[in-house]
Amino acid sequence: MCGINGFSSEDRRLISVMNRTIAHRGPDDTGVLVSNGISLGHTRLSIIDLSIKGHQPMSYARKGKIYVITFNGEIYNYKQLRKELSSAGHTFRSNSDTEIIMAAYDAWGSSCVSRFRGIWAFCIHDIVKKELFFSRDRFGQKPLYYAEVGGVLYFSSEIKSLMKGPIPKELDKLALREYFSYRAPFFDRTLFSSVKTLLPGHNLVYDLKKKKITSYKQYYKLKLRVPPQTFSQAKEQAFSLIENAVKERMVADVPVATFLSGGLDSSIVTAFAKRENKNLHTFSVGFDTTNELSYASRVAKYLETEHHEYTLDKDSALSYLDEMMYHMDEPIGADPGFLPIFVLSKKVHAFNKVILSGDSADEVFGGYDRYKFVHYGKLLKHVALHPTTHELVKRLHAMRGKTTFNAFMEANRVFETKELNDLGIREAFDRDVWNMALQNDFQRMQYVDVVQLLPKDLLMKADKMSSAFGLEQRAPFMDYRVVEFGLSLPTRWKLNLLTEKYILKKTFANIIPREIIERSKHGFNVPIDYWFTHALGDKLRVLVKKSTHGLYNKELIYKLLEQIKTAPGGFKARNIIAQKLWTVLVFEMWYEKYVK
Image (cartoon, rainbow, N blue to C red; front, top):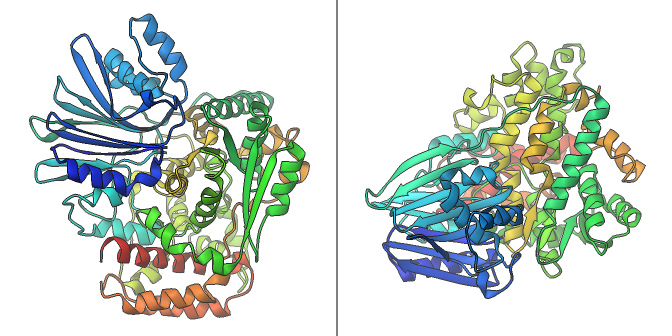
């Protein structure tokens, strides 16, 4: 995990300020290069080739061509690529994966990224061509923001660094609508109209002579594989693919640990990681009002790991909020899971620089309740609604007879249409997120999550919360071969009656405890429903009352704050109200830090 910065003009002071702003991403080293009409910056977290030879920005020259790179991420198959490039006559000064990227670019041009297995965001300055070449990994696990202002292209790993330049702070109203509708803006949008993200699986070329972007191309598009003919074959492939994905992500010159929630996904990752590292450390966090620590402890004992666990009370958890919001960088609503990852990262970085997680298995293998509800939506007309009926079931009950697309987008919504009207915010609704080229609607639901929501939500949670403490988080379930395999499977192998992630439960029943296989999905449950009836509710009320931006009608928020106090008890019953309030809280705290 590192931080990258740069812009297409020379200013040593500004590039140094940008580096200092994201020094947390790379506490081991920092570097700047100001020459040839550009400024490049880098903050380094040393994971592969810990020597000074891994310093960035790094240069590479061959046969009259000269390149300079600033790179964030890891190329897991760099050793295989090094052998191939060496046999073709390339020589290397370091043992880093960074140098391999430039040699690969020299050898194969922009198509080199299709050969990479890993996570990345980088900029290569081609000094001879006078171009900047940018690339971002297939699913957007590493962030890359950019803005064009006054004939200069600025870029960075984080918005807070980018905004040290002369970037306007005008809000993108469409992105704002998407945020309140679906937790995050779609496509390349951010809440700042002048700031864009390089889309996952895309390359971008900026011509320094013409002072403009001359190429913006997609190099990777998620494709389906031919599924195995039998369930037995599918289990064999699932085992092999996930085992290899974990093994690749253990590549590092420093120790690797795992986050262990006590759920299925992190337990599978931990089981394979233990095979590669006999002294594996595992880390868990829970809250005093609700936690899964007993399950995590059971897995750790079963796998014989060096286990660490932490319990947070309300006051200590909420004391992290301001710091967490700063590192969140852009508002990401309805995901309080940022908090436990932030706290865990703060604890883990004293022990490790690299951590594996079970993130994204739900998207890849169909683990969410909303997949169930939408898939079986046609049966909801037979469900009798009661005051205690799950709020999501009520929403989908009202959508019966509608298309799967409409039902799924409704299931993803934070605020209902009436509530958006009460807020004075027009609903965002974009059919371009729905890929009709796929074989069935279950795959289309997964596709929306993997291609649109993951890069803006879960993957940014992983990156930014771990990067806040110079920690690199890796997600084996996001290996593109695992993703393609998972989406390609028949629906019945993912959702079998009411059993979600069916193939994972059947495939890995012999390597993790039985009670972990059989328990229902929980993950890191954050008790925001309880918090909003206490201190967090008071905090939001104050923020909303003093806000002067006029971007929404405040009355609905006051109403929800009262409603959650009298809502039926229990996490599930009050959680949807809490998600709405969390979405507003995150926005208001972000607005104060980044706009006001």
